[in-house]
Length: 264
Ligand SMILES: O=P(O)(O)OC[C@H]1O[C@H](O[C@H]2O[C@H](CO)[C@@H](O)[C@H](O)[C@H]2O)[C@H](O)[C@@H](O)[C@@H]1O
Image (cartoon, rainbow, N blue to C red):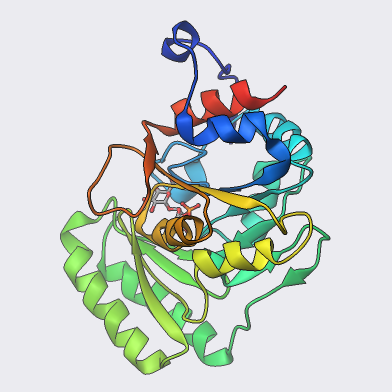
């Protein structure tokens, strides 16, 4: 899950890497907190969830940036926290996983989501159902379960209907969350926006303005939080009138280049 890709090579090397949304952070790092989504934002999307590639330099870049920000850098992701840590080893960052349903703060305190027995049973049923959806991938994330249809596009509607039925049986504590070629059931009480607010209530994030960077519908709640709190919201990809993000950066590679230039 790592590669030898070098930062600052190619197109980005020939152009100054000035991104208005992040200029303020480089000038006054003590005023800002950085919240980063992972898939499609820090990392390029891959064909399968386990095939993502982490460029070798990236953990070090994030660690250096975190130090500049006095530790006020957190990862906010749909992944489970236990999946995230090995990606950025040897560093461990504050992280919100499962779209905010679990969170490890800057002091290392972990709040996990409860997994009721009925949810365990539901995940097993979904695993069995998926045999009827060739190419679909079921990702068991503990207190959430995702069905990826990137390689089963013809089964999208059927998967969606099955997940909707499971949601209705599971009750109001659960939510149906759509993402890029994926649909999942996760705890209803959580959102990435709430996770950002929870970090901002604690040291070393407290008193800073948030910069939230993401690429997907689940990132919209943290864009809304950043906008409300006088921060910056940045969407990776093409500008899109449906997003609440007020700025955009073209691709994960471009974002990695920009983050690299912010490290002093
Ligand atoms: O909040 P994120 O960090 O962006 O995580 C969102 C989901 O990312 C993963 O799925 C997505 O990325 C895969 C690998 O690039 C891709 O194959 C898939 O189609 C995407 O939906 C992850 O597997 C999910 O658990 C996350 O919720």
